[in-house]
Length: 345
Image (cartoon, rainbow, N blue to C red; front, top):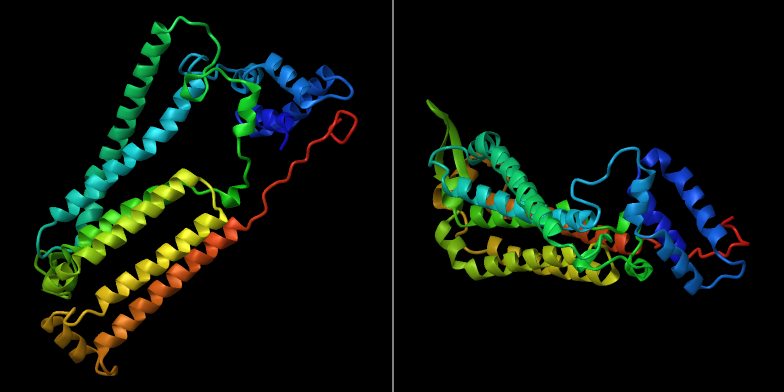
């Protein structure tokens, strides 16, 4: 996109959807009327500088005040809020799930216990974290705004005044190539959950039967000593997943490089997972006897279950890798720059 298109997009994205198209046409007409017949990029830059910060111009089209914080720091305030909030919520959720899993009583179904705790405590903790982020960030920016008396021009990222050159730093991509923040947050939370479950498998995974006080664990299914012996592989897999999530979060978009990194990471995870799950004596003797007695129609039920799990994991990572390449190859909008005498009129 050229500077005019980028500027119009930066204005209209802050407006209600129903009015964006009309205002975009009006703003384009205004810009082109201010330009000479055979204009250059320098002419465009001067005109956009006269129009000013897109956030301030968008506020002029609104029927109501746009800012909680004053115009000078509003955009910066929103940027920091969008950056800090997911991190704070992620830390809260990770702490909650780890603490809940570790505190789960023996002989009680983990899923039911976590679900109860999530409803009674988890939601409250997340809402409290969101309130804390909003309160303290608003307070900090309110103090900064009242202490700073050096001009009133809106500040962009890194506390710099907006300039038309900032439009060149904007990357316009279709939503199909975007990496949602919640996807990376969810992946990191899931990594922490499965690692916690892994090192507490003997107290969580097993055979449950209905008792007088609900579902009760009868015998663990996995040998914890065997799982603990592979701790280094588990840590490597966790580091790999968290590193990939951070890389996706920083990239914000699917590229060929990210797609390859994602695919290679998934393959390595599959190899590590296969080594762990094929370890000798992975299942406890009690669970092996349970499988043999109840799955009489299958020869070597342990081997059958392991193969099924590996197959499901393989299909999952193959689908994930395919989606990564599909999104990476999604076409990016080309530069539809136009002159005043062209299509833009």
